[in-house]
Image (cartoon, rainbow, N blue to C red; front, side, top):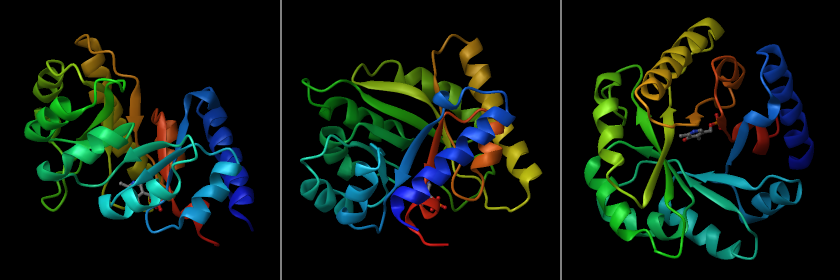
Length: 225
Ligand SMILES: *Cc1c(COP(=O)(O)O)cnc(C)c1O
């Protein structure tokens, strides 16, 4: 099956999951996670109508972005970002999904070029309190969102989560619902957040049921089953 055919199949599954959740399929955006995939594969997906791509590793991303500069791709950085690597993200990306440190946020705010719109960011939540994983605890998120509001070159869009992997759909759903509840709590406090970045190849159905607005999917697009 070609990348175009897998994308088409995935779009059908996303639409079906949206309908099952009584949601508008157009409210769910797809970021194609292209880490380790070649520029030729990204071109193929772009030609099939996929315009948002997510990368995890900066060095790899920059090489590929340079060779794809002729395409109007929206680039999302979804990997861990060290404070000394913020400049290229501020200059070249449209979204950062993994923000959880104020020092990184302040640097991005200072480095975002004036001619570009504010950098879209999501706050990463370590929803399962895994010591090995990046992100803030649920309790830490509200104060962090408040701090981001002081940084005009960043636009806080919502929350992002990478749950502990499980194949149990009910457990997947319960975890995503806790993220959705946190988002609703923040909205009730007056923050206009419109993005829940959650759902990957193995759990996007549960993520959509819980209110995801941005799926990050790689394997289901780029890998032959
Ligand atoms: C790799 C990755 C994905 C995509 O995972 P798949 O299982 O390949 O769909 C999503 N989000 C992050 C942060 C990733 O690193």
